[in-house]
Structure formats: structure tokens, C-alpha cells
Amino acid sequence: WPDLVRLAREPSAPLRVRNQAVFWLGLAAGEAATRDLAELVGDAALDREVREHAVFALSQQPRHVGVPALIRIARTNRDPEVRRKAFFWLGQSRDPRAIELFEEVLSRP
Image (cartoon, rainbow, N blue to C red):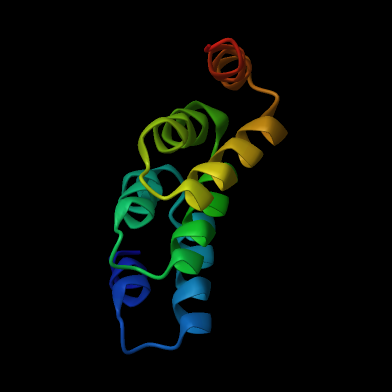
């Protein structure tokens, strides 16, 4: 799976190939890739589409690792579109931690 991370970061690779690398990284590596997927999301040098694919791949991880990573992204990522994707997938998770985040965000003045 480290090769998939390198391919996802390779600027000379076609966008479609980088997106597929992220997809297979999420499927093949499971929990071991969660940290690498989160790092891809946080890498502002990557195309937004690749980062959004990494958000999706995180949403497909087991809840005990995927949801905390998505919560961190929703709270801290600088790209509002990437944060929006994280919030979307958190909403799909129906996880109590995600619901707590929504309550917190919606109760802010």
C-alpha cells in the first residue's frame, strides 16, 4: 500500500489514476491506511478531487478509525469543500460522535 500512497501523490500521474490509487488504498490497506489517507486529505498541494476521494475512502473505513479521522478533517481542514465532504460522510455514518459534532456546530452562535 505504500506504493499506492506514492502514486496518489505523483503529480505527473493522470488524475484518474491518482483517484484510483486512493480508492484501492482505502479498500486494500484497511485500518493501516487511515493515517495515510488523512495525510492525503491534509496535503493542500494535491488536487482537491484527490483529497475528496481520500475523504470518501476514510468514510469506508471501520467506524472506530474512520469517524475520528473524518471529525478531525471536519474541524480542521482549511479547504471548505473538503470539510463539507467530511461532514457529508459523517452524516451518513449515523455515529454518535458525528451527531455530537453536528450538535456542537449547530449550537454555535
